[in-house]
Image: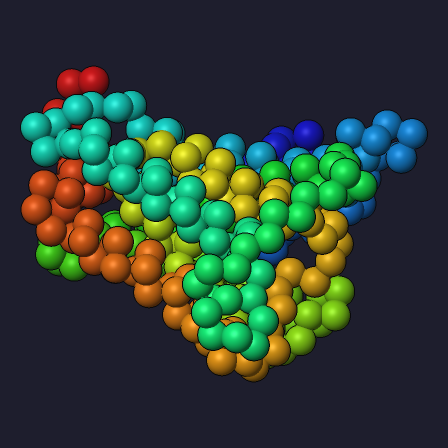
Length: 303
């Protein structure tokens, strides 16, 4: 209640009045900081589900999602990040299925790659090591929080960048996709020394997660459904938690050649998919949904 009743009108009053796209991004970053540390709302361990939900930021994640809808409305954009589906002549189910397939492959590679110093292992060695002891409430909620929280921040970054560069029709969609992904990657800089994560591993994480960020940003703009990247984001983190525990170091980097190869594969393959999406009917759908998000589409106003 303190998040939704007290902070919501304050956030709308101050962040909602911002007109400059750069100041809006700063405002969203500050709101993320405000909504993140909610450990003071922790409920006792005798109620394990509520304890885990409140101690790991899930309440704050849902609060930010609700706030994002109101902020979008205050800025004159579409109220709901879950756009109503409108099938245009440019939309292709095959493209959507391919994006979903690539997202599953990306999750599989990131969650189960298990390489060593031998070069070939960066391509072909996988290990599905889901452990029963990690099937816990904490593993679930620790993955649920970033899935909702960070994808909500992506939604806000996308609509801010679309609006900020809306006059550059040929550039606004690439700027929104790649700019929001860059911010998504940089948001992981705070993981330095988290449960022993080294500085080198954190830099590798910042770069590596951008690959998934590319896919999830395109998937959202093509489908209009924020819950799709939320599901994949949750799934990737949850599978990692089930193998090493939610409170383990999030990233490893040993400076082997296979570390660098793995980084390249994580980033360049999804990047190639986004470049492919920048052309033809695929790009037209991205532009149509960008117009709908900005409330610029006459077709949207009829729905």
